[in-house]
Image 1 (cartoon, rainbow, N blue to C red):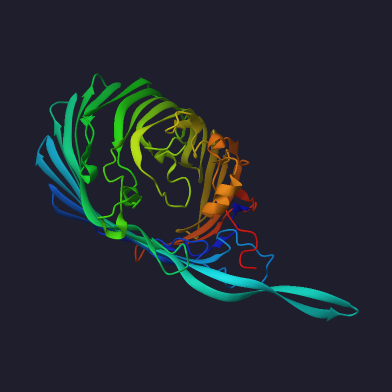
Image 2 (cartoon, rainbow, N blue to C red):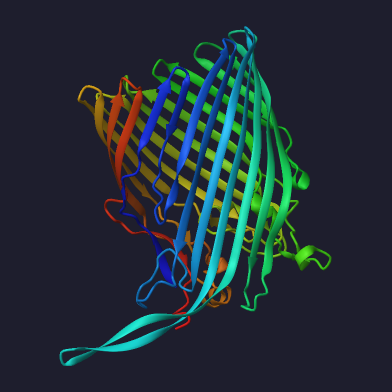
Length: 533
């Protein structure tokens, strides 16, 4: 096995922005650098149209695509190791996404208005893996009186190994009505609706005989409703309370939550100081693809398998937070916060006793292949944060944020462990300086410094890893170890050109990513010793 590093020292010169503003119609296009492959530039648009004084419609759009190919078959030097791929296959990754939406606002009366936001979004992930077979060939060259041996990979054959196509579309609507009864009392109620359309396909040829095993084959729909009601009461000019009820229903598995109370309180102690407090219950669905993984034998089902997780319930949590804000001047603000979060009804293994928990999904790049699960896991997050922020003034701004926290969970075995996200501390610094030149143009420099606790891992089970062809940690040591701290410095230089005549702003920027070139360890990956050699 080898250690995979996440490190970058790249120059980003394609962050070119254009901004068009005329009357009440605005639009912008922003490019984003995609390291490791060529990507289509994401685009975004914003259009605002005032139909009448009491009506307003706003439309937005953003889209993008990326392409990453990791070609192991092109390697010739046996000593070369690709840090981002497996050394026995070529990997081809394609992703697309897009969102378009509009917001409609209407004044129903002097004290009542309606706001409705509708959007359509879609995302697609397409991946193919091609297994390669190769051997090492030796050649001899003379160098004066000595003979040198040159080792070189020779490609023998390739075959399709796996492919998946995950597509998800979603139509969303959020509608709320605000009713002001008096200066002290405001009522807000509404409904959030999400309609999902799924198309998940995945198959793998493990034995090399062309017998592809289907792991996902789902085309279905689901709908989620989230009604809410909220009352805002101003006890005085310095004291405000928000109290409400929220509920969630998801048709996939007929999952629902009971009405969830939430309370927020803000007290402005002095003109430059305030204390806030909040508590509440929350619910969320699982990553949608995990509902449909074919993990259970079924003789009467297509492909001879079915999913045992289609009826998973919602994950739930109870939150409590208290914060203190203080203005240290016209442009300097200090914010401190302490929080506690208890998570319950987290999916864990149903029949096996182990450390697996859905709470860790999303900590890496790999998909989750769950066996039968049930909503019986728990987790706890708590910590403190402090932020010092200087707003842009006298040509510069900065923000410093520090956090100390702990994040633990229990799987089906009831043993408390660190979550994959438990780095225990994080410090971020952000700064920017900008100066006007040539009347309307500006030049600027900015940067970001990140220092955080390393990712968690455990002792590798070598035999299980070889059998599974991926890293498997021993259950009793899962997440007991920690990589070294993560540290990264990014710097950005930019030049803005403002056109008064055409009302256009162009920005040309150069991003220097990880300028210290520090190799931060991301994860461990399984690499067989000299495969096919």
